[in-house]
Length: 341
Image 1 (cartoon, rainbow, N blue to C red):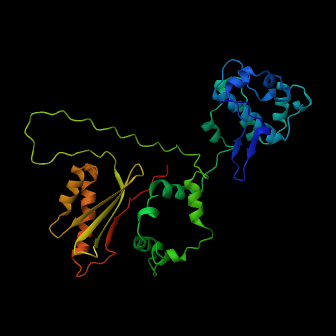
Image 2: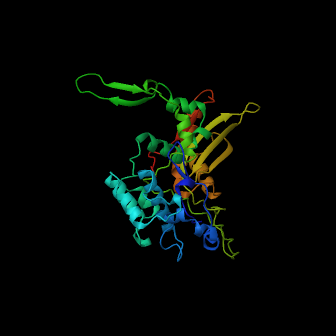
Image 3: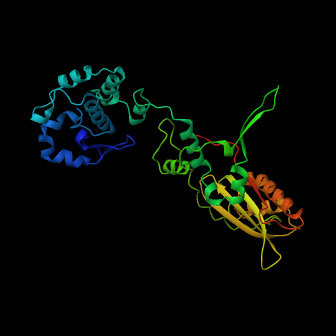
């Protein structure tokens, strides 16, 4: 879909996003005579348009739109029916005061398609490049790394990790007591929930970072051939889990109707899929055996076995050491670092 992008067909939103709401397929421009006869828009068409259609044509049209927006109008505009010549375009570029604007437009309007930058290179041009604020970087790290917290974490854990008494910063002095800043001391000037939601739906993208690549699809396990061999005592895994666990949570609660203890494990995989596992436990169960069963049945990766076993061990220890089971007894293991891209 490469059409003739014109300023009259452009829409700039309040967030300074540019949309082209009338873009025709290549076949229309090659076979409809009326488009060729519209002289007032001929200067938007790249020189090589009649030979080959590539994304470089869109860059050329975008550069002409940028020139009209910067200069308000092109000298000798084709609204009167006359053709805008190359001299008119160059004269309009020379009339710009900002050297960065001149360089940006000239690079987009290069005669040779190979000399024009692509869309990503234009984003890094000094005219468009913007250093993202730390608030936006933190929001992207929260959305794309721990988006499951608001969906699976319990209210008790939220209060324990992000309550008003949690220390977020501390200044240590050698000659006097230090100063602590708690979560309740941080002023909230706006609704951060709305800002994070906008980031989640792509309203504030990170243009200076490489787009996140989706994880490779999991291949369907090949059915093993039946071989006449002696099976080992250890059961073979039914399905090998290739994904890694990035966040996990475990808690143990007692059933109201019985005296059994029910353990629930919430796993967040690296492809942003959640997995919830539930089983009945007793004092005879060990964390290593339970973690090994999760590996054997293909619920977790072999590499995550020790981490899951440690989490189960801490949860069971806190459960069985109390005289009465607390419904809030839980253990949480969060990632130690959040990638920004």
